[in-house]
Length: 451
Image 1 (cartoon, rainbow, N blue to C red):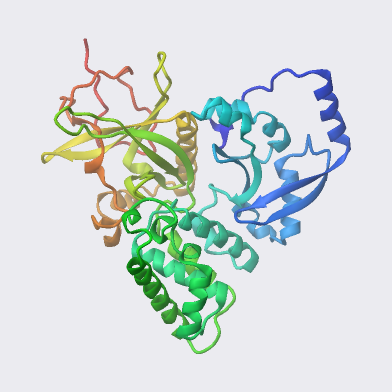
Image 2: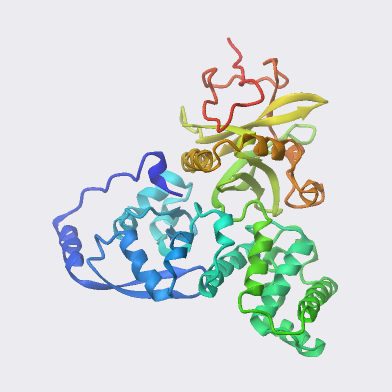
């Protein structure tokens, strides 16, 4: 995410005169620049002085090429992306210079090997702005803008980045099928078209057989594929029979995005990390589980990468957090999350450790989002407290739902309200461990064991 929020990019290394000469010449020459969209397309620009051009200047050219109205200009941002790291850029950033620092950023924020870092190359991508509120997105009427947002949401659904339940991904797949092939196809034509396009074009890879996860043991079995096809086509028939007139151009786009908005992590920036597994077996062997951490304007969501479900979801009013740096060789950067919980019927404070070299980025983004939320909501504490104490939709409370938190599966550190320990720990932090809180906490601070 935005590196400036937590200390800025590392300074550029000193370079020889030949490299300085190449930069100077690139300031003068007009050069081709490809700005990728989420999907397979790109915007081709011819930019003068590319070495010094800013994101703000590039934005004007891209919006003009894509015919994006000024009213929707804040919906998108520039990102530098590669398989190893994704960073949203600020208007003042100069992409060319940041690309030249990419290896430094990978060493700082990833655990990638030297070989992987040396071969990694970022692309400049134009995609959704993590700071754009969902409420404003619902007001967008331009079809081109809605399609860009839809394309990105669809990629995240198919990749399993947005965990969702079967009825959700089936409905979304049917909407995509309707937008790709139109409504009103008879059963025979619809079935033939689906088999030609393949399920993986409409359903998440871990469901349709393109990856591991919940249905990996059923991969390749005709019976499972037949059930998925049947359910998708059944939803498609429902869409086709709704209304006697052809749908408005934006109707299905809005339906798709509206469904995605119901997922709490829509619009998140994603980070990679690991958490401790609970000790298992006679020898109490433990280990770490790979997780995605999604952070949005509304909260923090920790998701199991393999199983494609939510482990923990917290609004900012429900948590405290901090970031600790390594204190010795072999130590990790850690993002600490503290939240209310229960153990054997006793209210406790729970601590979750997320190991990640991106903890610094995560902490900075949380702090910035909390500040934005506080400024936007002002005195909306009563409404937030209602949400916290029981205002969630019933659907999200179902234990079988992948969007429901699984706190019982986490290896957390628990404390009772008066500071008495339930699980022994000697934190290496001061008693004022958590100091950043969007609202006054309803529980006491973590007490450090002395001695």
